[in-house]
Length: 225
Ligand SMILES: *[C@@H]1O[C@H](CO)[C@@H](O)[C@H](O)[C@H]1NC(C)=O
Ligand SMILES: *[C@@H]1O[C@H](CO)[C@@H](O)[C@H](O)[C@H]1NC(C)=O
Ligand SMILES: *[C@@H]1O[C@H](CO)[C@@H](O)[C@H](O)[C@H]1NC(C)=O
Ligand SMILES: *[C@@H]1O[C@H](CO)[C@@H](O)[C@H](O)[C@H]1NC(C)=O
Ligand SMILES: *[C@@H]1O[C@H](CO)[C@@H](O)[C@H](O)[C@H]1NC(C)=O
Ligand SMILES: *[C@@H]1O[C@H](CO)[C@@H](O)[C@H](O)[C@H]1NC(C)=O
Image 1 (cartoon, protein in one colour):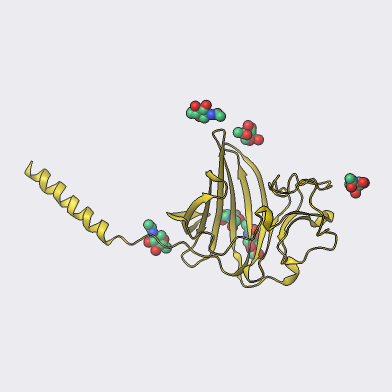
Image 2: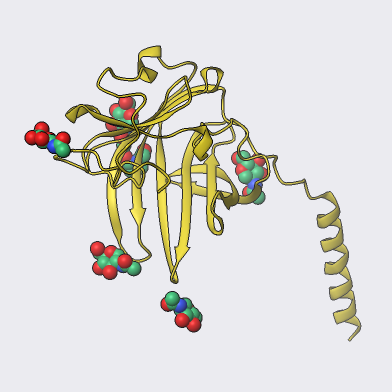
């Protein structure tokens, strides 16, 4: 009995000491003001991988501009279903926030484009510190790289979540989001190719609205529907 008390007392004491010296969780990171990076995108419906494609992000908060490219074989929920007259709906698609703040869906290979929404409909470029209220969820190895993760409830409430993983040196590892509906958790990930990560302003041409876009006419099916 005595031994047991000593043992338990010792481990309690040890536990208390570990607890009191435990470092606070690392503060959520902020995105660089401007950067670009390529990625592999994947969507899963709970059991199966439903799409897999390449893509790229171009981001410049100083111009409040961004372009999210979902390349061939994409099944992106913003690109799909806008009612564009495209022969290949899963072909290369760009979601462009132009400098004047409207959001366009563009199929460059098919020269099709429409205005999906604007700030009035809640379509805005993510702020660099969008993770400000997020919670540290620990470290994880992603595609062979040690990464730190943060999570916050998604923009659509409790059935959605967003996660962001990056290295201790600030290189993006993965963006992760999930939506649970009818007991099925749909997970969508962008796994970044770190050798393509560049801090700094992308070329201005990246954010130019193509001349075949009608800036003033909405998509046949605007976003959000
Ligand atoms: C997920 O996708 C697989 C393969 O396409 C399909 O068999 C399965 O029914 C899907 N599950 C759900 C919940 O949609
Ligand atoms: C859609 O595109 C095809 C091929 O370019 C064209 O023949 C057709 O008229 C277009 N339809 C509409 C509604 O614009
Ligand atoms: C997570 O990784 C960071 C950076 O490598 C490291 O400083 C920290 O101690 C790790 N935290 C845990 C809980 O492993
Ligand atoms: C979800 O799962 C719960 C618990 O297993 C079950 O009671 C409920 O009927 C399921 N809902 C749907 C929409 O499948
Ligand atoms: C990552 O980027 C490098 C440099 O552009 C390229 O050589 C490599 O193939 C890319 N890897 C993937 C998985 O796309
Ligand atoms: C992840 O790692 C594998 C194996 O090294 C590689 O083939 C793949 O391209 C990597 N993915 C990314 C997005 O870097």
